[in-house]
Image (spheres, rainbow, N blue to C red):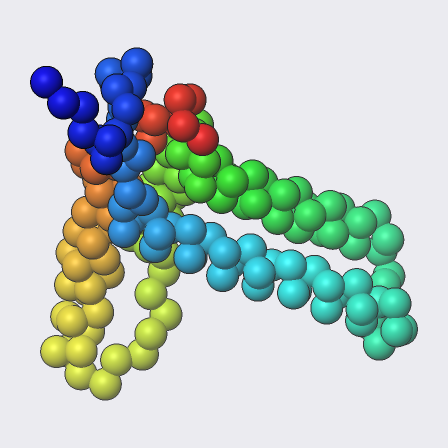
Length: 161
């Protein structure tokens, strides 16, 4: 019996798991989070720049400091959530689901201030706000946190990332 010199060596590891790919819903969530966090950061920097260059005069320093602190807190939390989702942590998944649910509730219950030219346009706006957008966001929430691909992606965080 001859040994093939080109065959790979026998491995002791029997349970080799493939790292699941990141679902599209997670990529979309990360893209939106990155855009919104970048916008918040630019807004914070612009506010600080306007105050530093004396273009905008502060009348109440306490409210200004609280506003800046709140913006910094939101930016830090956003970056933390993005890191948790990128590293496929289970807490990142649940915070992402909570953020998507909050966005869905806001889009459903927001006040529509659009002026429509006709009743048909008004009906289209109603269908969009109360039917189409909630269905799309519900599908996004499901595919982000509860689909088989998402559960597979978020289940390997402790062993791989």
